[in-house]
Amino acid sequence: MQKHLFIKYLIFAALFPVVVFGQNDVPKQTVKMELFENSDMPHITGYGNCQWLHPLDEPGETLLEQPDYKSDKLYYYAAKYGDAEDNIYTIVLDESQGTGKGYDTVYVDADNDNRIDPDAEKFSLTMSTTRNDIPLRMKLMVSAGGKKIPYYFNFTAFPYTDENNPVEKIHANARNSSIFTGQAYLNGKKYKIGIADLNSNGLFNDVEQGLFKGDRFLVDFNNDGLFQDPLDVRQESFSYGRYTKIAENWFTIEADPSGTSIEISPASPDIVKVQAPKNVSTMDLHSAVQSQRLSFSDCKAEAVTGDYRLAAMKLSMPDSQSRIWTANGSFRENQPEISLKMGEEKVLPEMLPFTVSIEPSGKAPFEEVTFTLKITTSIGGTFRTPRAKQRPDGGFEIHDAEGKIIASETFKYG
Image (tube, rainbow, N blue to C red; front, side, top):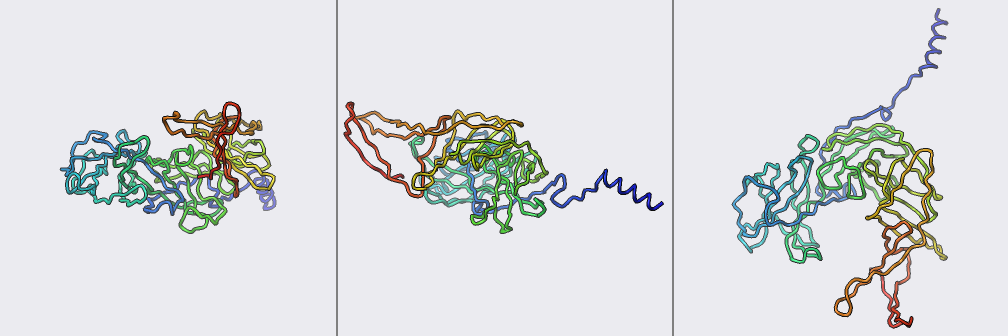
Protein backbone atom coordinates (compact mmCIF):
# COMPACT_ATOMS: atom_id res chain seq x y z
CA MET A 1 0.00 0.00 0.00
CA GLN A 2 2.75 2.46 0.98
CA LYS A 3 4.69 1.51 -2.18
CA HIS A 4 1.68 2.33 -4.36
CA LEU A 5 1.21 5.67 -2.61
CA PHE A 6 4.89 6.52 -3.10
CA ILE A 7 4.68 5.71 -6.83
CA LYS A 8 1.56 7.90 -7.17
CA TYR A 9 3.40 10.73 -5.39
CA LEU A 10 6.33 10.51 -7.81
CA ILE A 11 3.96 10.63 -10.79
CA PHE A 12 2.13 13.65 -9.32
CA ALA A 13 5.41 15.44 -8.58
CA ALA A 14 6.62 14.87 -12.12
CA LEU A 15 3.42 16.22 -13.66
CA PHE A 16 2.94 19.07 -11.19
CA PRO A 17 6.32 20.14 -9.81
CA VAL A 18 6.29 22.18 -6.63
CA VAL A 19 7.52 25.75 -7.21
CA VAL A 20 9.13 27.40 -4.20
CA PHE A 21 9.13 31.19 -4.64
CA GLY A 22 12.02 33.21 -3.29
CA GLN A 23 11.41 36.66 -1.87
CA ASN A 24 12.25 38.13 -5.28
CA ASP A 25 10.22 35.65 -7.32
CA VAL A 26 6.73 36.49 -6.06
CA PRO A 27 4.48 37.36 -9.01
CA LYS A 28 3.89 40.88 -7.76
CA GLN A 29 5.09 43.19 -4.97
CA THR A 30 3.09 46.18 -3.85
CA VAL A 31 5.55 48.52 -2.18
CA LYS A 32 4.34 51.26 0.13
CA MET A 33 6.37 54.39 -0.52
CA GLU A 34 7.00 57.25 1.90
CA LEU A 35 8.09 60.82 1.37
CA PHE A 36 11.85 61.33 1.49
CA GLU A 37 12.64 64.97 2.07
CA ASN A 38 16.05 66.56 1.58
CA SER A 39 16.83 70.01 0.21
CA ASP A 40 20.00 68.72 -1.51
CA MET A 41 18.23 66.17 -3.69
CA PRO A 42 20.92 66.12 -6.44
CA HIS A 43 23.32 64.69 -3.86
CA ILE A 44 20.83 61.90 -3.11
CA THR A 45 19.69 60.99 -6.61
CA GLY A 46 22.34 62.40 -8.94
CA TYR A 47 19.67 64.56 -10.58
CA GLY A 48 18.05 67.88 -9.84
CA ASN A 49 14.84 69.05 -11.46
CA CYS A 50 13.34 72.43 -12.16
CA GLN A 51 10.11 74.20 -13.08
CA TRP A 52 10.93 77.66 -14.44
CA LEU A 53 8.47 80.28 -13.22
CA HIS A 54 7.98 83.28 -15.48
CA PRO A 55 6.93 86.57 -13.85
CA LEU A 56 3.32 87.71 -14.28
CA ASP A 57 1.81 91.13 -13.60
CA GLU A 58 -1.37 89.55 -12.23
CA PRO A 59 -2.39 86.13 -10.91
CA GLY A 60 -2.65 83.28 -13.41
CA GLU A 61 -5.94 82.27 -11.77
CA THR A 62 -8.78 83.88 -9.85
CA LEU A 63 -7.87 84.32 -6.18
CA LEU A 64 -10.70 84.59 -3.67
CA GLU A 65 -8.58 86.22 -0.95
CA GLN A 66 -5.21 87.97 -0.97
CA PRO A 67 -3.08 89.62 1.73
CA ASP A 68 -2.56 93.36 2.15
CA TYR A 69 0.57 93.62 0.03
CA LYS A 70 3.12 96.39 0.66
CA SER A 71 4.57 96.80 -2.84
CA ASP A 72 2.87 98.45 -5.81
CA LYS A 73 4.98 96.26 -8.13
CA LEU A 74 4.18 92.65 -7.33
CA TYR A 75 5.45 89.62 -9.17
CA TYR A 76 3.07 86.67 -9.55
CA TYR A 77 4.07 83.12 -10.52
CA ALA A 78 1.87 80.20 -11.55
CA ALA A 79 3.46 76.90 -10.53
CA LYS A 80 1.66 73.84 -11.92
CA TYR A 81 1.66 70.53 -10.03
CA GLY A 82 -0.56 67.45 -9.96
CA ASP A 83 -3.51 66.28 -12.04
CA ALA A 84 -6.42 68.21 -10.49
CA GLU A 85 -8.49 70.35 -12.84
CA ASP A 86 -7.14 73.36 -10.97
CA ASN A 87 -3.42 72.57 -10.65
CA ILE A 88 -2.13 76.15 -10.45
CA TYR A 89 -0.38 77.20 -7.23
CA THR A 90 -0.06 80.97 -7.05
CA ILE A 91 3.16 82.42 -5.62
CA VAL A 92 3.54 86.16 -5.00
CA LEU A 93 6.74 88.17 -4.47
CA ASP A 94 6.31 91.29 -2.28
CA GLU A 95 8.41 94.08 -0.69
CA SER A 96 7.67 94.21 3.04
CA GLN A 97 9.11 97.72 3.41
CA GLY A 98 7.26 99.19 0.45
CA THR A 99 7.78 99.74 -3.26
CA GLY A 100 11.43 100.00 -4.28
CA LYS A 101 12.76 98.78 -0.91
CA GLY A 102 13.64 95.29 -2.13
CA TYR A 103 11.80 92.00 -2.55
CA ASP A 104 12.01 90.00 0.66
CA THR A 105 8.63 88.34 1.15
CA VAL A 106 6.90 85.41 -0.54
CA TYR A 107 3.28 84.33 -0.30
CA VAL A 108 2.19 80.92 -1.60
CA ASP A 109 -1.23 79.32 -1.92
CA ALA A 110 0.22 76.09 -0.50
CA ASP A 111 -3.06 74.14 -0.23
CA ASN A 112 -4.41 75.42 -3.56
CA ASP A 113 -7.69 76.72 -2.13
CA ASN A 114 -7.28 79.98 -4.10
CA ARG A 115 -6.94 81.87 -0.84
CA ILE A 116 -3.60 83.16 0.44
CA ASP A 117 -3.41 83.24 4.23
CA PRO A 118 -1.55 86.46 5.21
CA ASP A 119 0.17 84.70 8.13
CA ALA A 120 0.37 80.93 7.60
CA GLU A 121 1.34 81.24 3.92
CA LYS A 122 3.85 84.08 4.27
CA PHE A 123 7.65 83.54 4.21
CA SER A 124 10.81 85.63 4.30
CA LEU A 125 13.07 85.40 1.25
CA THR A 126 16.58 86.48 0.38
CA MET A 127 16.93 87.32 -3.30
CA SER A 128 19.21 85.14 -5.39
CA THR A 129 21.22 85.94 -8.51
CA THR A 130 21.84 83.85 -11.62
CA ARG A 131 25.16 82.82 -10.05
CA ASN A 132 24.21 82.46 -6.40
CA ASP A 133 21.14 80.54 -5.25
CA ILE A 134 19.68 81.30 -1.82
CA PRO A 135 16.72 78.91 -1.77
CA LEU A 136 13.60 78.88 0.37
CA ARG A 137 12.30 75.34 0.94
CA MET A 138 8.56 75.35 0.21
CA LYS A 139 5.88 72.73 0.86
CA LEU A 140 2.73 72.31 -1.20
CA MET A 141 -0.14 69.83 -0.87
CA VAL A 142 -0.53 68.41 -4.37
CA SER A 143 -3.45 66.40 -5.79
CA ALA A 144 -2.16 63.36 -7.71
CA GLY A 145 -4.05 60.19 -8.56
CA GLY A 146 -6.90 61.12 -6.22
CA LYS A 147 -4.55 61.62 -3.25
CA LYS A 148 -3.11 64.66 -1.52
CA ILE A 149 0.66 64.44 -1.17
CA PRO A 150 3.26 66.75 0.39
CA TYR A 151 5.59 68.15 -2.24
CA TYR A 152 8.72 70.11 -1.30
CA PHE A 153 10.99 72.17 -3.54
CA ASN A 154 13.62 74.93 -3.39
CA PHE A 155 12.15 78.29 -4.43
CA THR A 156 14.56 80.95 -5.70
CA ALA A 157 13.88 84.36 -7.26
CA PHE A 158 16.44 86.42 -9.20
CA PRO A 159 16.76 89.34 -11.66
CA TYR A 160 16.98 87.95 -15.19
CA THR A 161 17.34 89.01 -18.81
CA ASP A 162 18.10 87.12 -22.00
CA GLU A 163 17.46 87.35 -25.73
CA ASN A 164 13.81 86.40 -25.26
CA ASN A 165 13.39 88.51 -22.11
CA PRO A 166 15.21 91.79 -22.87
CA VAL A 167 13.55 93.74 -20.03
CA GLU A 168 14.92 92.76 -16.63
CA LYS A 169 12.31 91.20 -14.38
CA ILE A 170 12.35 88.90 -11.37
CA HIS A 171 12.13 85.32 -12.58
CA ALA A 172 11.92 82.31 -10.28
CA ASN A 173 12.27 78.57 -10.27
CA ALA A 174 11.23 75.55 -8.22
CA ARG A 175 14.11 73.07 -7.99
CA ASN A 176 15.11 69.76 -6.40
CA SER A 177 11.75 68.40 -5.29
CA SER A 178 11.35 65.60 -2.75
CA ILE A 179 11.09 61.93 -3.77
CA PHE A 180 9.29 58.82 -2.46
CA THR A 181 11.20 55.77 -1.20
CA GLY A 182 10.46 52.23 0.00
CA GLN A 183 11.90 48.71 0.28
CA ALA A 184 11.60 46.02 -2.43
CA TYR A 185 13.06 42.64 -3.36
CA LEU A 186 14.96 42.60 -6.65
CA ASN A 187 16.92 39.58 -7.85
CA GLY A 188 16.70 37.89 -4.45
CA LYS A 189 17.84 40.82 -2.33
CA LYS A 190 16.11 43.63 -0.52
CA TYR A 191 16.99 47.17 -1.58
CA LYS A 192 15.91 50.71 -0.89
CA ILE A 193 14.06 51.99 -3.97
CA GLY A 194 12.82 55.41 -4.98
CA ILE A 195 10.75 57.26 -7.57
CA ALA A 196 11.67 60.78 -8.68
CA ASP A 197 9.52 63.38 -10.46
CA LEU A 198 12.22 64.59 -12.83
CA ASN A 199 9.88 66.52 -15.12
CA SER A 200 8.67 68.61 -12.15
CA ASN A 201 4.91 68.29 -12.60
CA GLY A 202 3.96 66.71 -9.28
CA LEU A 203 3.25 63.28 -10.80
CA PHE A 204 5.48 60.23 -10.39
CA ASN A 205 4.46 57.93 -13.25
CA ASP A 206 5.41 59.78 -16.44
CA VAL A 207 7.22 57.65 -19.03
CA GLU A 208 10.61 59.22 -19.67
CA GLN A 209 10.90 60.91 -23.05
CA GLY A 210 14.44 62.13 -22.45
CA LEU A 211 16.24 63.35 -19.35
CA PHE A 212 13.99 65.67 -17.31
CA LYS A 213 11.12 64.75 -19.66
CA GLY A 214 9.61 62.05 -17.48
CA ASP A 215 10.34 60.22 -14.26
CA ARG A 216 13.04 57.87 -12.90
CA PHE A 217 13.03 54.66 -10.84
CA LEU A 218 15.91 54.38 -8.34
CA VAL A 219 17.67 51.46 -6.60
CA ASP A 220 20.30 51.80 -3.84
CA PHE A 221 22.39 48.74 -4.74
CA ASN A 222 25.35 49.47 -2.44
CA ASN A 223 23.19 50.46 0.55
CA ASP A 224 24.93 53.81 1.04
CA GLY A 225 21.71 55.82 1.33
CA LEU A 226 22.26 57.39 -2.10
CA PHE A 227 20.90 56.53 -5.52
CA GLN A 228 24.17 57.26 -7.29
CA ASP A 229 27.79 56.19 -6.96
CA PRO A 230 30.37 57.32 -9.53
CA LEU A 231 32.72 54.54 -8.37
CA ASP A 232 30.11 51.77 -8.70
CA VAL A 233 29.72 50.17 -12.12
CA ARG A 234 26.09 49.31 -11.39
CA GLN A 235 23.46 51.70 -12.62
CA GLU A 236 21.23 52.99 -9.81
CA SER A 237 18.65 55.00 -11.80
CA PHE A 238 16.39 53.79 -14.59
CA SER A 239 14.06 55.41 -17.10
CA TYR A 240 10.46 54.97 -15.98
CA GLY A 241 8.50 52.95 -18.54
CA ARG A 242 6.64 49.71 -19.15
CA TYR A 243 9.71 47.49 -18.80
CA THR A 244 12.87 48.00 -16.76
CA LYS A 245 16.00 45.83 -16.93
CA ILE A 246 17.72 45.59 -13.56
CA ALA A 247 20.90 43.48 -13.25
CA GLU A 248 20.04 41.36 -16.32
CA ASN A 249 16.44 40.70 -15.24
CA TRP A 250 13.32 42.42 -16.57
CA PHE A 251 10.56 43.89 -14.42
CA THR A 252 7.30 45.75 -14.90
CA ILE A 253 7.24 48.74 -12.56
CA GLU A 254 3.99 50.66 -12.14
CA ALA A 255 3.96 53.70 -9.87
CA ASP A 256 0.86 55.40 -8.56
CA PRO A 257 0.72 59.00 -9.86
CA SER A 258 1.14 60.16 -6.25
CA GLY A 259 4.34 58.13 -5.82
CA THR A 260 2.92 56.57 -2.63
CA SER A 261 2.91 53.00 -3.96
CA ILE A 262 4.69 50.96 -6.63
CA GLU A 263 3.82 47.55 -8.06
CA ILE A 264 6.79 45.45 -9.21
CA SER A 265 6.40 42.23 -11.22
CA PRO A 266 8.83 39.96 -13.10
CA ALA A 267 8.46 40.56 -16.85
CA SER A 268 9.34 38.90 -20.15
CA PRO A 269 9.20 41.57 -22.87
CA ASP A 270 9.62 40.65 -26.52
CA ILE A 271 13.27 41.28 -27.46
CA VAL A 272 14.73 41.76 -30.95
CA LYS A 273 18.20 42.33 -32.39
CA VAL A 274 19.19 45.69 -33.83
CA GLN A 275 22.16 46.03 -36.18
CA ALA A 276 23.83 49.40 -36.62
CA PRO A 277 26.79 50.76 -38.61
CA LYS A 278 30.13 50.33 -36.83
CA ASN A 279 30.30 53.96 -35.75
CA VAL A 280 27.10 53.93 -33.67
CA SER A 281 27.80 53.67 -29.95
CA THR A 282 24.39 54.33 -28.34
CA MET A 283 20.86 55.30 -29.40
CA ASP A 284 17.99 56.67 -27.31
CA LEU A 285 14.53 55.50 -28.38
CA HIS A 286 11.22 56.75 -26.97
CA SER A 287 7.58 55.79 -27.28
CA ALA A 288 4.46 56.62 -25.30
CA VAL A 289 5.05 53.61 -23.02
CA GLN A 290 8.76 52.81 -23.19
CA SER A 291 12.12 54.56 -23.14
CA GLN A 292 15.35 52.68 -23.82
CA ARG A 293 19.00 53.33 -24.55
CA LEU A 294 20.60 50.81 -26.90
CA SER A 295 24.31 50.21 -26.31
CA PHE A 296 25.99 48.60 -29.32
CA SER A 297 28.75 46.00 -29.17
CA ASP A 298 30.12 44.66 -32.46
CA CYS A 299 27.39 46.68 -34.17
CA LYS A 300 24.58 44.81 -32.40
CA ALA A 301 22.21 45.54 -29.53
CA GLU A 302 19.05 44.10 -28.02
CA ALA A 303 15.85 46.11 -27.77
CA VAL A 304 12.25 45.81 -26.56
CA THR A 305 9.82 45.59 -29.47
CA GLY A 306 7.60 48.54 -30.32
CA ASP A 307 7.28 51.64 -32.46
CA TYR A 308 9.77 54.31 -31.41
CA ARG A 309 11.11 57.74 -32.22
CA LEU A 310 14.87 58.24 -32.43
CA ALA A 311 15.73 60.98 -29.92
CA ALA A 312 19.52 60.89 -29.51
CA MET A 313 22.63 59.11 -30.74
CA LYS A 314 26.32 58.84 -29.95
CA LEU A 315 28.85 58.11 -32.70
CA SER A 316 32.47 57.10 -32.15
CA MET A 317 35.45 56.44 -34.40
CA PRO A 318 39.21 55.90 -33.89
CA ASP A 319 41.70 57.97 -35.89
CA SER A 320 45.15 57.04 -37.19
CA GLN A 321 46.66 57.84 -33.77
CA SER A 322 44.20 55.49 -31.97
CA ARG A 323 42.35 58.40 -30.42
CA ILE A 324 38.61 57.77 -30.05
CA TRP A 325 36.53 60.63 -31.41
CA THR A 326 32.91 60.92 -30.31
CA ALA A 327 29.99 63.06 -31.40
CA ASN A 328 26.67 63.37 -29.59
CA GLY A 329 23.60 64.20 -31.61
CA SER A 330 19.94 64.93 -30.91
CA PHE A 331 16.84 64.69 -33.06
CA ARG A 332 14.61 67.42 -31.68
CA GLU A 333 12.65 67.89 -34.88
CA ASN A 334 11.62 65.31 -37.47
CA GLN A 335 12.56 62.36 -35.27
CA PRO A 336 13.05 59.25 -37.45
CA GLU A 337 10.56 56.46 -36.71
CA ILE A 338 12.01 53.05 -35.90
CA SER A 339 9.71 50.02 -35.74
CA LEU A 340 11.05 46.94 -33.95
CA LYS A 341 9.03 43.76 -34.58
CA MET A 342 9.40 40.18 -33.44
CA GLY A 343 11.00 37.89 -35.99
CA GLU A 344 12.85 40.76 -37.70
CA GLU A 345 16.38 42.02 -37.16
CA LYS A 346 16.33 45.78 -37.61
CA VAL A 347 19.20 47.05 -39.77
CA LEU A 348 19.89 50.76 -39.41
CA PRO A 349 21.15 52.88 -42.32
CA GLU A 350 24.65 54.30 -42.56
CA MET A 351 25.08 57.53 -40.60
CA LEU A 352 28.43 58.78 -41.93
CA PRO A 353 29.87 60.76 -43.53
CA PHE A 354 28.69 63.88 -41.77
CA THR A 355 27.13 66.69 -43.73
CA VAL A 356 28.72 69.95 -42.55
CA SER A 357 27.36 73.39 -43.38
CA ILE A 358 27.96 76.94 -42.18
CA GLU A 359 24.86 78.95 -41.29
CA PRO A 360 25.36 82.74 -41.03
CA SER A 361 23.03 85.07 -39.15
CA GLY A 362 23.01 88.86 -39.25
CA LYS A 363 23.41 91.23 -42.16
CA ALA A 364 26.80 92.64 -43.14
CA PRO A 365 28.07 95.30 -42.98
CA PHE A 366 25.50 96.82 -40.60
CA GLU A 367 25.12 93.92 -38.16
CA GLU A 368 27.50 91.51 -36.49
CA VAL A 369 27.51 88.30 -38.50
CA THR A 370 27.59 85.03 -36.57
CA PHE A 371 28.59 81.76 -38.26
CA THR A 372 27.19 78.54 -36.80
CA LEU A 373 28.56 75.12 -37.66
CA LYS A 374 25.76 72.65 -38.46
CA ILE A 375 26.64 68.95 -38.48
CA THR A 376 24.09 66.30 -39.51
CA THR A 377 24.02 62.63 -40.55
CA SER A 378 22.30 61.00 -43.50
CA ILE A 379 19.13 60.61 -41.41
CA GLY A 380 19.25 64.07 -39.86
CA GLY A 381 19.85 65.16 -36.28
CA THR A 382 22.10 67.93 -35.05
CA PHE A 383 25.52 66.87 -33.76
CA ARG A 384 27.99 68.72 -31.60
CA THR A 385 31.60 69.10 -32.67
CA PRO A 386 33.40 65.71 -32.41
CA ARG A 387 35.53 65.37 -29.31
CA ALA A 388 38.61 63.40 -28.25
CA LYS A 389 40.92 63.66 -25.23
CA GLN A 390 43.26 65.72 -27.39
CA ARG A 391 41.86 67.51 -30.39
CA PRO A 392 43.40 70.13 -32.65
CA ASP A 393 42.31 73.75 -32.63
CA GLY A 394 39.64 74.63 -35.14
CA GLY A 395 39.99 77.22 -37.83
CA PHE A 396 38.41 78.85 -40.85
CA GLU A 397 39.24 80.47 -44.18
CA ILE A 398 37.24 83.07 -46.13
CA HIS A 399 37.65 83.00 -49.91
CA ASP A 400 36.74 85.64 -52.46
CA ALA A 401 34.83 84.98 -55.67
CA GLU A 402 38.04 83.84 -57.37
CA GLY A 403 38.92 81.39 -54.60
CA LYS A 404 41.69 83.52 -53.09
CA ILE A 405 42.02 83.39 -49.28
CA ILE A 406 41.25 86.86 -47.95
CA ALA A 407 41.07 85.99 -44.24
CA SER A 408 41.88 83.03 -42.02
CA GLU A 409 42.03 82.38 -38.31
CA THR A 410 42.27 79.58 -35.76
CA PHE A 411 40.20 79.34 -32.62
CA LYS A 412 39.84 77.24 -29.50
CA TYR A 413 36.64 75.43 -28.58
CA GLY A 414 34.56 77.21 -25.99
